[in-house]
Amino acid sequence: MKNWLWQSIKYDLKPTPENFIKFKWYHFVFCRNEDRTISPGLYLNSLLDEIKNELAKHKSVNKKSLTLSVIQNILQNPGTKKEMTILFEAAQVSDEAIKVFLNTMISDQTHTIGKKEATPDAGENKVESFHTRTYIIATHLYFEINNDESQYYTLMQDTQAFKKFLEQTFQATNLSSRLSKLKNFSYKHVLKGKNNDGEKGQLKPQFKQIISHPEIFGADVSKRADEILKSDFPES
Image 1 (cartoon, helix red, strand yellow):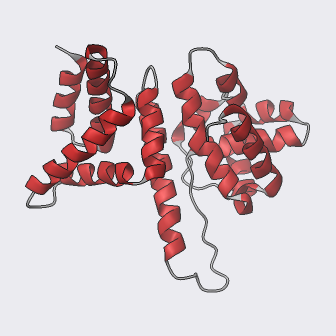
Image 2 (image 1 turned 30 degrees about the vertical axis):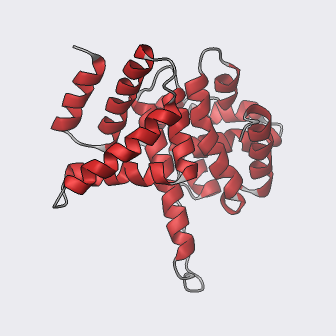
């Protein structure tokens, strides 16, 4: 059985955004192998039309209609559509990569909605929540610009101390339980690695979050993130 057919069955049984994206990525790969002129952008344009037609058939709210609405919102926004295009350009797309993508999209949408809402009452402390890897990258940059990069690697080996640092320094919330499994993560290793264009692309939205929030990560950290983005992602 073709991979995309199996993924479509998994999506039908459990219609989540994660399963939908994985199903459609496998289907895109299948289509591209049949016709190399099919690009991620072309496929996603057609996918948006497909989703609109499918949603028109739903007369009530259900899991599938909600999932399709999530993907439709992503594809209708030029910025988030670009990030999804990058995801589809990857040679391999893991479950973790899809989760990172969706968490980043949700965080960006929450930030956009928050800007449209009324200004909080004076004294109200509204703290945003980002993907755990965003905080980890910011920490790496923090120690890097303070010429103490070795301390970053040392701190990461003590999960509780690292968690406390993230909470106190960046007011981090909703940190992933997988923090302990990211002890050896380094954005530098990802940028320098070979045959990892997909993983490299997943760093871009996290650098953008750091750049967009100097009030959380600090002006120096945001500036350093901007330098790296311009250097390693010149098309951004």
